[in-house]
Length: 161
Image (cartoon, rainbow, N blue to C red):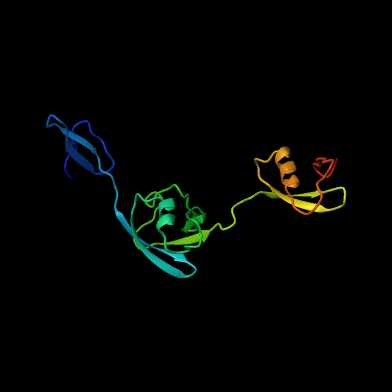
């Protein structure tokens, strides 16, 4: 093991570059390497070889499996854990010969159902997200086809008027 230059501490390998005056300029080497792995989709394995710096979102874009799904609906499970789409293959612990499992989120979260009964005893359902205001609910009701609009909308919270 060769001694490190004076004043330079590092946990990884060092690269020696020279500045404009010919003096050595030491910096840590980037640990980018290619990883050979497979993606499992419905029992079929798709072999891939990608750089360790590839994010899982990038992987979802180049994947041939589940082409009918948009890339932002593709998620990966590795060692029983759902991997974050922004993490790289290297950060996720993916190594040569391992298998990632592809899962799809075909129906993205659209909100919780809100049931509304109008004056004619018609029950309507609206999917309300966390960012919905009462104005959004009223707009959804106004846009519903066929059934008559509610003339005097009242908000019911917790089953009471």
